[in-house]
Image (cartoon, rainbow, N blue to C red; front, top):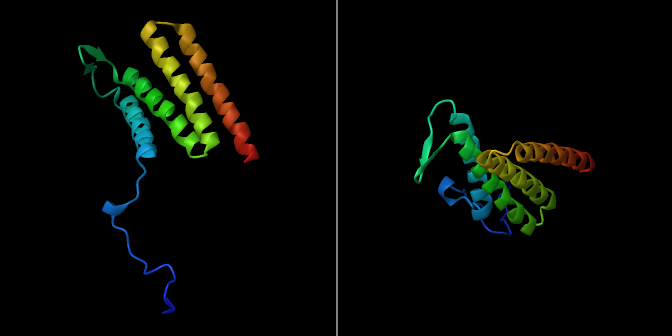
Amino acid sequence: MSGESDPEGPVTSISPLELDIERWPAVVGLLVAAGGALFLVEPLVGPIAVGSLEARPVALSSVVLAAGFCLGAPVFLRRGRRLFGIAHGIFGVAWAGVAAGTALGSGTLVVGAVVLVIAGAGFLVSRARRW
């Protein structure tokens, strides 16, 4: 360094314990990561007890992903990240449709949710080309 004083004060190092982690984006990330982890452990573990019910990890995965993405929509929209908010909203509704369709045994609802995922992906690709 040049030895001149920094007008904003001395530069200090940040330890990993002092990271500025924003709460709600971190919760969204943890929920989406947990949903992905539940999907990946499906072949390795049996049904998981949720209260008095037992559910396969892949079924829980869709519920946790839906919660994470649905929470992500308002989190990103409030921060002015419109495209990220829209994407989270689309995929949150789609994963909720997969979860509900599976729980209700409605193939129509599951197919509709998959169509929403495909349409949402197409929308995001078209927006990314303009970005």
